[in-house]
Image (cartoon, rainbow, N blue to C red; front, side, top):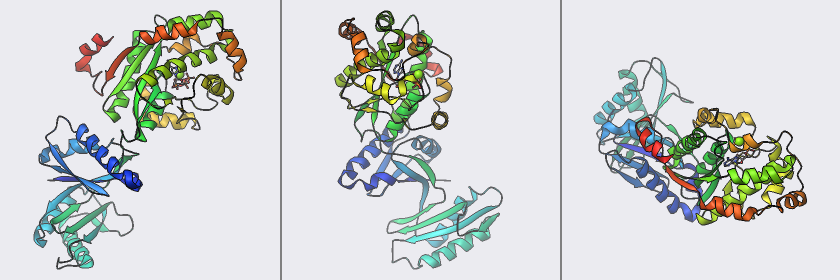
Amino acid sequence: MNFDRILIRYGEISTKGKNRNKFINQLKRNILDSLTGLSPVRIDAGRDRMHVLIDNTAEVDQILTRIEPIFGIQSFSPVVKTTKDLDMMKSEAVALVSSLVRGETTFKVSARRADKSFPLDTNELNQEMGSHVLRNVEGLLVEMKKPEIELVVEVREEGVYLSAQRIQGAGGMPIGTGNKASLMLSGGLDSPVAGFQMLKRGVEIEAIHFHSPPFTSDQSKEKVMKLASQLASYSGMVKLHIVPFTAIQQAIGQQVPENYTMTSTRRMMLRIADMIREKTDSLAIVTGESLGQVASQTLESMQAINAVTATPILRPLIAMDKTEIIDIAKNIKTHDISILPFEDCCTIFTPAAPKTKPKLEKVLFYESFVDFEAMILDAAANIEVHNITPHTLDLDEKEAFSELL
Ligand code: ATP
Ligand code: MG
């Protein structure tokens, strides 16, 4: 089919009052960015929907694939534009519907007439177009309620638009409309999902990862880069800050009683994350915590850990079950990376019996014997920063990656 445009329906963003223009312009920019490398397109944006106008119709399938993961889109449809000549409309409709029919398929026509000067009204259009398509395409059964193919015929001043597919979009809000947050990204299952949930609400993310060489390997770092790269497939680019954490973890191991090491470790991570957040102008910290999952994820623990900062800590997975998180991880293709068996700095130093109800006074007392402030500044001065794109780790870019390590 010679689709020459894609109709994009916004969904939720169209309810945003006077911010609407900001949302629409950001969505437009995000769509144009996602099409880099393809032939130029034009975007015609209205209040409730936009059209991507395509000159190189051979690229339609690629464009559809790239539009699918973009947040802020409720649904989209490839569209053919034709003239207001009834014979022309009919033959284009037959070509369009035939390209989609597979065996017996239920069908109906939904005509809309915005151009009231057009000689046929909506009912007549449904009749004319429907009976012509039924006569000329095999396998169609009329079904008014939930047909598999709904041929939409829109007659407007400038021409007639035909479409027969409505593809579900990624939902959410356009990335860039919700400012920026810092994601604490481990190599586990949860934090990449938390990052995805924030991107979906329009928030840009920068990722922060703590690693403890030689206890954690280059492969565990590569795993985190792969996760960041997978998140970047939704946002274009993710900046990843890798923080050397060995010295702090060792100091905690030596000075803090074993059942409090987890609490202290998390507090130090959060202090450093908050410094990075401030430097990078982001407004919140995001974690993959889910209530009750492990010792550090009780309300008591969160209170003792959270006490190091007044910055909002967002925990999009807090009330989710592990099975729900795993389902999302599979959908967004981070699951198979997360389950690769490389060590994380926290699992290595995990005590046998971490405190599930740590007391803030106690942890403050234990920490008072070490000059953590100096160690934190030292770690912060030795951060590696990588700009990770969806292709950073492609096989043909292996060389580029080995330079990064
Ligand atoms: P995840 O699956 O995200 O690792 P988890 O269930 O294993 O989470 P924890 O290991 O207790 O839980 O970590 C809780 C949160 O702390 C993580 O979701 C992540 O946001 C942050 N975190 C843990 N380890 C690291 C790390 N090495 N670097 C950055 N953030 C981390
Ligand atoms: Mg973990």
